[in-house]
Length: 340
Image 1 (cartoon, rainbow, N blue to C red):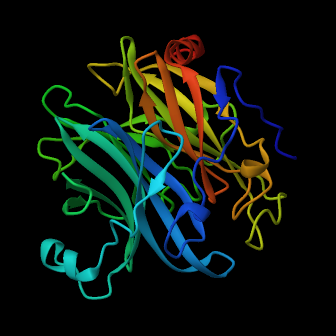
Image 2 (cartoon, rainbow, N blue to C red; image 1 turned 180 degrees about the vertical axis):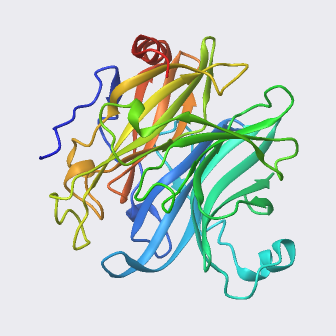
Image 3 (cartoon, one colour; image 1 turned 135 degrees about the vertical axis):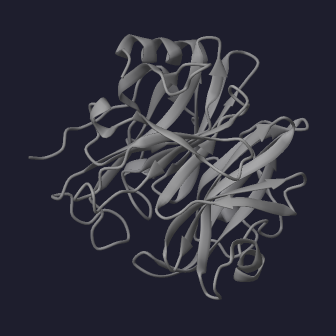
């Protein structure tokens, strides 16, 4: 059976001149620019983004690094002259006891400010599995890597403040052996020091949404509202009849942006789930043009003083786009969907 057509929620509006960042703006080798973290910091917007460069064939690239750009308005961005983060074996071997050649690449950064310190979560491909990392910086140049998860875990985002004295993160572990196939859900873990993590709990599952049959996970770091933590999620459905979509021989998945509302004092408690897509791939730069079509992946959300939120997302794994909405409208939609 063919997958149903999906549509975006009218409560959110794409920026009319999307995308807001493409590889044309990057002054070093760049093929795809997407999946970015963004914050407001010292009077300006700052974004770190994934850069895959020098395409070889299908899904193979010469390398991946993380770039940095700045903006006065959150729309028009100026990219720094060189990448700011690219994990090398030598930087991690002594810290984590890794053998030479273990680290393959790092990518998919997310930014969060906690108590006036900047934290970045990121994914790391290694010879023995996919790991999630956390690093800290004060200047976006020097990074202190604090922790790496065991395989396989990724899409980690940090809450922007401690809750009950603990750091808290959302994440998407990737069990395959125990589930028999892709069936990835959103979990929560906490830490006393940003290094040791545990007390994990399931927060949102694939079956909680009307449009997912494959994956659900965090997208952007949570946004605090008076009525709860607003969390933008990614949700995936797979259709084995989709065939070729994009640069690969087959791309059968569709990624949409969704959202849930979590309790302020106990974010394990889901207050509401918006059951339908917040953003579904419809625009050309999301659904038809690019490396992997039919992809919207929200990765940053900045709440403005006027009660709106800027949501940044990777489109078709190729460019970075932005959409805006009223925070109160989104909260109401989550509450109307009911608790998990």
